[in-house]
Length: 484
Ligand code: NAD
Image (cartoon, rainbow, N blue to C red; front, side):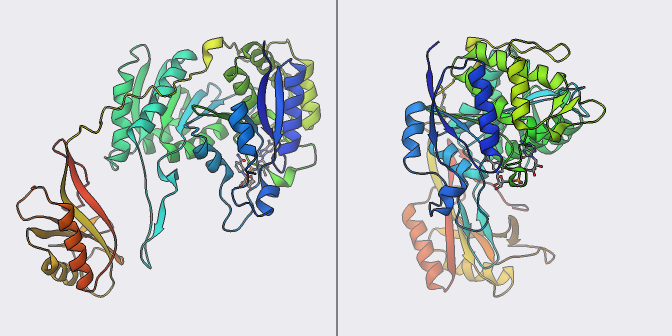
């Protein structure tokens, strides 16, 4: 078995203790790792580096391509960027994989049969981080869902299911409301599901899906979701399985992958030999599978299950009636080491195969290519205005439309308010004014848009952004407003 170089960051708070415990177990289990240590987190932030990672650390990550990371503390106050988001986006870690398993009857849970894996899209959605203050009253965050991004994550979920002998992949979206963004994710889910006839598939609207998952998690196997829903629901799933302290996660990319616990640095517990190293250890086990050291992964995982089964528990999962011995971080790690080679009796023994990790890099089937016929049919001009009624604005802007174009609609927060708005509709200071051809549905030019903007500005309005309205192969590429 070759020795694999990995990059390790000890992090902040309880990070160093749980990392030492994890590395001790891996070493005793015979993992063949050449460790490069890097500095990330609080110290780096407070030294004036707002990204929390030293520039030289990227060289190590690029060369080892495997990152075992302890949690870090993001200092309070503005200006500090989330290191996790930076690392995920910079290194293209597109898939976040979080197994959420119940360890009944040894760890208290209301869902004894729970064993599901959440595959969360990790780079796009509202986490693209594109936000604006547009007016005095209105902030905006752009939700970006791309075809290649969705294909990669959905395919990853199906490959993961196939390789881990999982029977079903469920997709959660809110495409009854967000027909373009979540609608694309759902559509791609259906396309890719058809390529995996051996795996059952289903789609739930995220709100009722989340309720079902919190109530009957046993009904799910693998769930794939856009970023925001996945972020929230994977914490819910980990917590109802037993504890967020027991879940590990993998962040998979084409070039680099990162493995960690899902919890944070729990600063109040730091330096007291109290923290449970299990989340990080389970992340490290995913790392061993990823680098092909599956026999070691199996040994460590089964020893850990035996430890949990023997009632050797840290304070966070200690339960008088069930636990046998309350231990600290170091003692827990030693208990796992002592059980290397053992298998659990009640909990299911884990087996890993060489082909368990789903590496599906680059296998995207981008269908909507540049040969799609794109036609510009209008423009939405957003203006910052707080001087009168929707009718005042509609009448004023109707007059500025250049030849060939007309103002067809004004909306506020997605509701049509002109022409024919309702007096009850609340209006903010951000208005969307839609200009289209006089000849219904006809193509317009970029030059006409520039003319519109010139006239809007000349009439004394503050335009804050525009969105072009396009049809793609004759299909409308923009939403209609409520009431339009
Ligand atoms: P947290 O997950 O650190 O802790 C919440 C509580 O859960 C703790 O007070 C503790 O009681 C318990 N807990 C968590 N992990 C435990 C463990 N391994 N063993 C025993 N008990 C455990 O969440 P928080 O308090 O909201 O955040 C603390 C810091 O961690 C913040 O600075 C936050 O930004 C950071 N954070 C980092 C990551 C990461 O690096 N991946 C993730 C989340 C939060």
